[in-house]
Image (tube, rainbow, N blue to C red):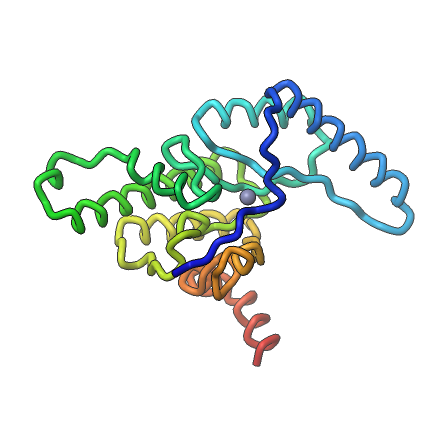
Length: 222
Ligand SMILES: [Zn+2]
């Protein structure tokens, strides 16, 4: 059974959106102050990680990037919600997210196991489609924790869900084509995984599409 420790970095504060915006602007100001202060010895890049809870976030990010044009060097394209519910907060919230996904009529008469399989398949479809929307609209320089959708099911082999697997390949192919990098995120170890994000199956897709990177990996670990 996967043991999961709550993320100590997540602050449960009741901060209004305006307060978060002020906090973000303070971060940008401080980051640029440091960039200038250390310009002679360091090249600091200033970035942000995206969110996609609903289409409103796409519009919000467009406005944010526009209002801080020239001050944000790169973005990390990440999705942490499906059906507008967090998928990485805790196990109960993840289950609530899965339960919120409506089943198509044709499976409502099938067994509980089949229904759960279908529900998880739709969940994966929604996650990878939101990720693709983010990639298409913003072409983030980095793709964050690409397979966060299986945080609580690390043994899930994505190719056993053919629709989702096609979307994984589509997303990786699209990102590689415009030159994105994929984050290798060690937070997965803290959350009970045996690997970092991405899991080995997704990493293999990436390496197969970037032969030069695959050569570097094999020479590093051989
Ligand atoms: Zn994240």
